[in-house]
Amino acid sequence: METVQKRRDAMQRHNGTICPNIQIHLEKMKADAGGSIPRENGNEKFEVVGPYGEQYKLDLQAWTCGCRKWDLSGIPCAHVVAATNFLGQEPEKYVHQYYKVESYLKMYDNMLTPINVKETWPKTEYAKVLPPDVKKRAGRPKQNKRKETEAPIQGRKLGTQGTKITCNNCGNVGHNRRSC
Image (cartoon, rainbow, N blue to C red; front, top):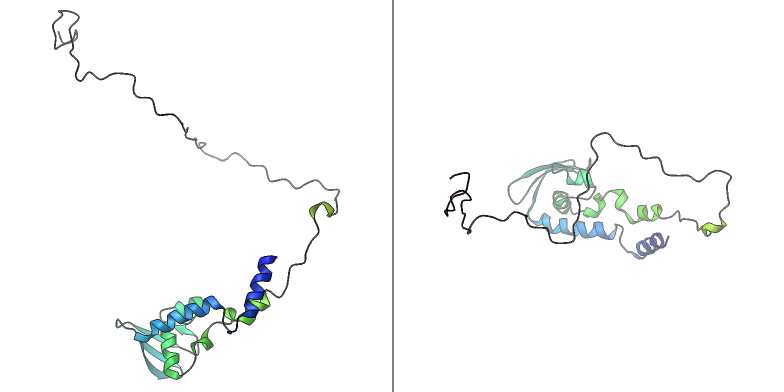
């Protein structure tokens, strides 16, 4: 409940018409729009050429851009900002309605009503709601790996490298009974 109140109070203190985070994003788009060249086609339709030669079709009446960033997010992309600068308009006009401060305040208008402590809630005659029974899943059960805290035990057999082998049959060094 405190979070809702804090957010509503912060938005009431805000002076702009657009939410602060969206305004920051729009300022970045204004900086990126410097290299774009809009070519007007009439009826608020444009062809915007980017700094690297890419071209995008833009329609301010239908609120569509060829890069689709504006279509998907509702925040004007750099191409829209370049076109609105060409027309002498503010790009804030083309931010979607749900990013406006008035929409944000309408969302937080309905405040939550406080409730009493759990002990004062009325008791019911019904049984407590329990979690559902977990059924055994199909397939082989997953094995948990053992986590050993001690150092792993080395192999029990010793290697034969560096030791002299003597034969039990003849007693000579360098071979064993099998190869005698």
